Image (cartoon, rainbow, N blue to C red; front, side, top):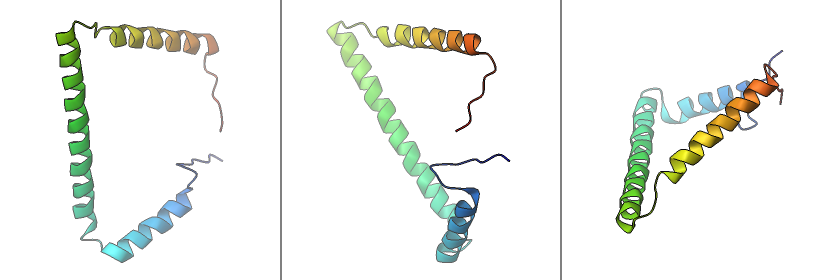
Length: 94
């Protein structure tokens, strides 16, 4: 038996929440709510990307090395790959 938990909520609890949401808002309002949430998430993502871009541009103007994070990410990925190669197909159950 496979138990999948998302934030300590089981499938039955998610189903009950979905029923309550449909009862409160109605089936015709749910797509509108989902679209609104999607637009909001997109705006937050665009804002964070703009902030990252401004930080990188100001760092380049100041003469700071912005490739440090790229090199660090490469090293982290190499270590992850080495650990995966070492541990093999070990699966952990939570």
